Amino acid sequence: MADHLNRFLVLTVLLGLFLRFCHGGVTSTFVRKVEKTIDMPLDADVFKVPSGYNAPQQVHITQGNMDGSAVIVSWVTQDEPGSNTVLYGTSEDNFEFHAKGKLTQYTYYNYTSGFIHHCTLRNLKFSTKYYYKVGIGNTTRHFWFTTPPEVGPDVPYTFGLIGDLGQSFDSNSTLSHYESNPIRGETVLFVGDLSYADNYPNHDNVRWDTWGRFVERSVAYQPWIWTTGNHEIDFAPEIGETQPFKPFRHRYTVPYKASGSTAPFWYSIKRASAHIIVLSSYSAYAKYTPQYKWLEAEFPKVNRSETPWLIVLMHSPWYNSYNYHYMEGETMRVMYEPWFVQNKVDIVFAGHVHAYERSHRISNVAYNIVNGECTPVDDRSAPVYVNIGDGGNLEGLAANMTYPQPKYSAYREASFGHAVFSIKNRTHAYYEWHRNQDGDAVVADAMWFYNRYWSSADDSITIFS
Ligand SMILES: *[C@@H]1O[C@H](CO)[C@@H](O)[C@H](O)[C@H]1NC(C)=O
Ligand SMILES: *[C@@H]1O[C@H](CO)[C@@H](O)[C@H](O)[C@H]1NC(C)=O
Ligand SMILES: *[C@@H]1O[C@H](CO)[C@@H](O)[C@H](O)[C@H]1NC(C)=O
Ligand SMILES: *[C@@H]1O[C@H](CO)[C@@H](O)[C@H](O)[C@H]1NC(C)=O
Ligand SMILES: *[C@@H]1O[C@H](CO)[C@@H](O)[C@H](O)[C@H]1NC(C)=O
Ligand SMILES: *[C@@H]1O[C@H](CO)[C@@H](O)[C@H](O)[C@H]1NC(C)=O
Ligand SMILES: [Fe+2]
View (cartoon, rainbow, N blue to C red):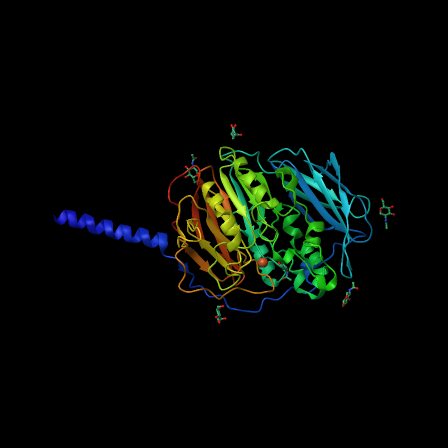
């Protein structure tokens, strides 16, 4: 009898602990010193124009096709169009290949852009370091990148996560911490809101140029996968600018056609062991729209035997418990969440809210307008939702949270920072979020992910907070 009682007690305590781990949402006790977030001045070191006549600037790369064997190299020349050609090769002193790109230019109100070059390097070998140079003829600049391993189910690969970056002193800390993170990110998944140029009078596009020069130190050497946010819309009829996404479209190219998409705002890529779907919160997504039809056709193409990890990027979060942008993602959630659960998406990264939050595995798909079942519930087939809009832009931190913390929210903290998602094999991935704390990067949230297709184990336990 006593033995039974003891066992019962032990079980109760264990169960209690388990439930607490599963449901005890944590609001971080770390309180960041709230200082004004200010943009770096135009003469900041990170905005320096490279020296030399017509020197290429704002060099950036992104994936160029479906499987990562192509890379798009983009850059801007200011004085004259200059050469469209990229020379590249696998050794530093033998640029055996060349590719010719395309040139574009745009005006925005009274701003005229430099000469914007986009050039796709194709048929690259996997897991290979390539050296490349741009600006052939006048001032040449040299860079390098490493191609991803061939797509396959157990290929380890590490993604960095950055959102809502902007160009403040805090943005610079976030980028520096990402660069110095001992868990080396090989590709950045960027969840939207790049330069915040639109916060300047007439959306001063000079701030698109400074942003391009600021992030070059990372994005010229490793691809950043682009998602569009509201700060990319640049819709300003009051100054005659009525074509949404005009600066973004000219400056940032993405391989959307490779996934059968008809616009550069929603598309997918495969990289190593991940299938990454990029969605647009600011393009139509209702039934019958191009984005809806594309996504409906996309899910059946995901082959978890080839790419076990299914990751979705979007700008406006579906689950967010801060008092900012509350419910803005709700209509897209209503449209697409059932698909995410049916297709066992592993993780969704969003930005927009300038703070950090991670959810448990939950879904809210039972509601049908009359049954009243509109509460998020635990759901092991559902993704974890991460808000990583904490890059550090000039709009400052989102520090006002709703109370009590909703049960679906596992961890939330109003700090700037970045994260890494490190895939080990088809079943395991290690995820870690770093806050910017007085100049240091401090691990503040972490989780081992068990793949939703290859493992039925519950992984919603915070191991570090
Ligand atoms: C930005 O960060 C880099 C690297 O940490 C540093 O060298 C540079 O001085 C910083 N610039 C500004 C304006 O803070
Ligand atoms: C554009 O117009 C604004 C004011 O309307 C002015 O301050 C700025 O200098 C102009 N820029 C250029 C490049 O003409
Ligand atoms: C830049 O290069 C082009 C093509 O090689 C050449 O025609 C032009 O004279 C050069 N400009 C200067 C200032 O060297
Ligand atoms: C899925 O990928 C696996 C491994 O690459 C392959 O053997 C299989 O044929 C693919 N399935 C489909 C339906 O394409
Ligand atoms: C936080 O947001 C709520 C809801 O919008 C608002 O009522 C409240 O005044 C805000 N608190 C602070 C300190 O700004
Ligand atoms: C997958 O990775 C995890 C974490 O590194 C490891 O514990 C596990 O043994 C690996 N699985 C296989 C089949 O190698
Ligand atoms: Fe945003």
